[in-house]
Length: 266
Image (cartoon, rainbow, N blue to C red):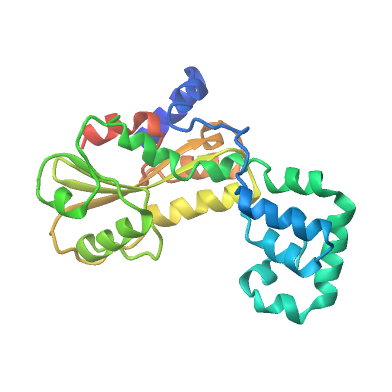
């Protein structure tokens, strides 16, 4: 197991790991989704007048459709299909009427799943200056200095910069780009809340970034990739994630809570 991975396992098992992790990922499970009042007014009118097509059209504009139906995604991606498929629209509308307007509203405003809130949280935490170095919001500012610094822009912009300047060769956005003691560090951040299914896929996704092959880079700089991971992967046991950590000591997987110490060790 890599030294920094082992230190992360130790931190998670012997200290107030979850309490500290809340500073990075301050999950707020009770924040409900917003429905603009003008949009809801259209929904109410269509519901009360039993205008099936307008009701479905209005609801499809919301972030969350109130019922799970295999045809909804198609209708959302191709609005022209609404008028061409009246039986499908009537079937969906019938289910909505059976629910009642109050229940429709409750379903439309359900809180986001906590794992969908986590995406921007790591970057918000970086923006607080936790790492003790300048955090630049433009590539121009970042490249104007050779000092230790972090570039914190969108995932896509990071990918483009890493591809053009550092030889990054994966079609995937990045969560972290830093420069410490002349070494460029590219990272993907994950909070893995459980084993199996989607969470295993998230783990595999981060590993794919860590093991990416690089082309030559324009800066002729040393570049390393890391996984900034937290959660159940550090629980000792006979599971896929922990077994992977034990078997790949050449890959750097480190908790966000130890990221600063790792970066300054370079």
